[in-house]
Structure formats: structure tokens, C-alpha cells
Amino acid sequence: MPRVTRTALIQAANALPDSDDLAAIKKAMIDKHVTLIEEAAEKGANVCCLQEIFYGPYFCAEQDTRWYDIAEPIPDGPTIKLMQQLAKKHRMVMVVPIYETPMTGVYYNTAAVIDEQGNYLGKYRKHHIPHCQPGFWEKFYFKPGNGGYPVFDTIFGKIGVYICYDRHFPEGARALGLNGAEIVFNPSATVAGLSEYLWKLEQPAHAVANQYFVGAINRVGTESPWNIGKFYGQSYFCNPRGQIIVEGSRDNDEVVIADLDLDMIREVRDTWQFFRDRRPESYGSLTDI
Image (cartoon, rainbow, N blue to C red):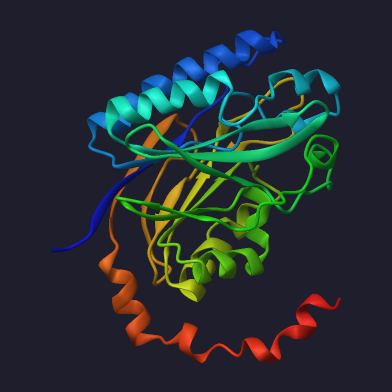
């Protein structure tokens, strides 16, 4: 029997673009996403992934300690508790990226993974932290991830997570493949003029090299007061051959749905024996530089 998983990506603009009230912004974004999650469930999604730090704007456009106030512990914070309830209600696996604080004064860019019964399975912390270009000051906010490249075994497939800037680094994408990932999600916040030319190159390349499905997510709209550029949406799924099979719009809040035939992974791997033909004993110098 075919292993087909209906999977959803949610892209959304800031719900309160003209507000400076952090609590109000966070609540409005959570409320918006609850509605979009319900839409994904109504469309039959088995798995749903939200965008990078889904409950706020991309605040790394400035350096201000006030944003520390929106961080929460995982899994004991209120947002993950709410998402556990929604996952159980909709019988849907969820990938939920938030701003994490495991202890006072320590912060990570993290995605929690919750199963269809509402159980917390674990988390992935973003490894590669940029601090480049005006408006991408992430080292001010995030400690580099220290939890490796976990893969979460769910009834709808084996799920890995790579967050935004991580996608520029093939090493972690390969680690996820070696760890058994069948679907890798990359929740992002990226603007036109900086990385758009890479958006449909790198992640299909990861899908080809590692022979798994990739779900790439980007938010939409512009965000005041920084206006660092337009978040160009175009969230998409690509298959293990690197073919984009569905794509969202550039401008709109949207639930992007795709049916992923996980049996295709074996078909492609039996054709292209990349994992058989690897030469790990010859790669030692990659970690020497």
C-alpha cells in the first residue's frame, strides 16, 4: 500500500504590522495561525509546519533586548502547550518554530515537533547563525544549536528540520539524510534581493543529494519599521528528484498542501545509489578547516 502523507506549509504576513506592542503582535500571530492550522486540517493535512519564529515579525532586523521577552521554554511554554492541544484535536503532526529560552539569558531559534496525539517528540535548534547584511543580526539573539540533527519518527513519516540560514550548508542536510529523514522542513524568513536567486536552487539540490522530500517555507509581506525588504513567500515542496511539485504565492497568507508519496524515496535511491557510493573515509579534511 502506498505511503502517501498529505503535508502542509503555512506562510503568513505580520498580523499587526503597525503595532509596537510585542504581546499584542504575538497574540495576533498565534490567533492567525490557529485559523490557518484549522484550514490545513480541513484540507486533510497529516503534517503541518509553520514558518520561522511564527508568532512574531523577523525582529532580527534590529538589535534590541526587548525581543527577549517573547521567548518561551520548550515544551513547557504556553505556545507549545497550545500547539499540542491543536495537534491532538486535528490528529496532525506539527512542526512549530518559536524563540526558545531554556534558562534565563540563553536563547535559541528552535522548532518543536509534536505528534498527532499531542505528544512532544523533541526539538531542533538552528545551527548556523548569520550576522550579515543590514537587518540580519541573528547572533545578537540566538546561541548556535547544540542538539545535532535529530529525525523524528512519526506515523506519517520520518521528519527532520533545518531552519532558514541552515539551508546554505549541505553538511547538516546530509546528516539528516543519514539519520533517516524522509521529509525535511526548512522554515525561513528571507527577503527578495538577498537570497531569492538561491531559493529554488539549494533546497532542491539537498533533496536530490539526499533523496528525500523538502518543504521550504518563507513568510510574506514587508515588516515595519525596518523595511529590510519584501518577504517573497513561494513556499514549496520538492520531491527526491528535486522537482518542485507545489508552490505558494509571493504575496498572500496561504496553506500550501502536497501529497508526498514516501515510497518514491526508495525508488529514487534504488536508481541513484548515492548513499552506497559515499566515501566517508576520504572526507576527514572537511572538518579540519
